[in-house]
Image (spheres, rainbow, N blue to C red):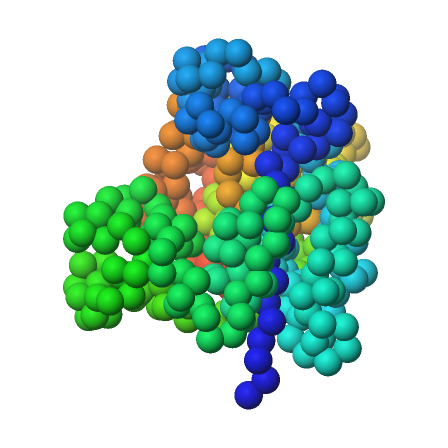
Length: 405
């Protein structure tokens, strides 16, 4: 069987690096990006700030206490999206197969390329090209699979590179903390520490059955990762995947309040699907079809987000712009496109800690009791838009079923 060569590339302190390109006086100084109020949260911080204990998603009030002399800025998500696209284009034209796992992370399958260029040399040259053309520092790890390469990247940071040879995965992982294993969050780490497991070497020595009894299926996956076992493929990246939903009315309507409430509920539901699928979107499209079957649509580019209030606001703005004929409407639809993988932290520039906790609480209720278990008041009259277990399984675009109102 052919040996796999999987690379993981990660832009170092991406938001901070972009800001330093715009203002060279930020270099070498503690820099913290996020909401400016005490109730805001940290979106990103420089390595200089991390030395004081500051980290992403920390309340801004706490960050100010830990590092009062840092430079604090709100950040520019439009600018970050632009630089992310620049890096994506360089990678896309340089490698045979890649997966964009977030705004600043990429997996690259170089399997077989050692016959032509040498995977290590090819990765080094790609790193140099990205740094030269964008000015952004980037680190990479190269190994036989995604997990080991991602951990190797973390070891190599900042602006470094690490190659883990085939067969040496367990030896490389052994001295590292279990916190470095992808998927080990705060609660899982606490459970592992209660079992006396601090380093990966200890986890490697424990029977898989014991971990299964404690952490069940996720525990087995963590145990496999600790042994350097990961057969997940690099999934080809398609920039323009989308999710959408539309509603055809049994009776054509011109009730603007009803239409706006329905569109709000549709956007809210799709935003939840984005978060459930760990996705962000950068384009909103609204469609209306009049009683004479003439159909019109309008779209707007936005910074990557999965936040209800941002997506609902833009959806309603597009509807107000589009609905000019004051004629009976037969159908309305909403589509979110230009999707990339990413977590909610990408929206922290203007959000408060309370807002983030609210979304987390609502999503937990929906996951347990159904998509319509909790919704905004203006969407209460809208019937269920549709339910799906995971609209992001696979790489094909997702189109939600048409439903009658």
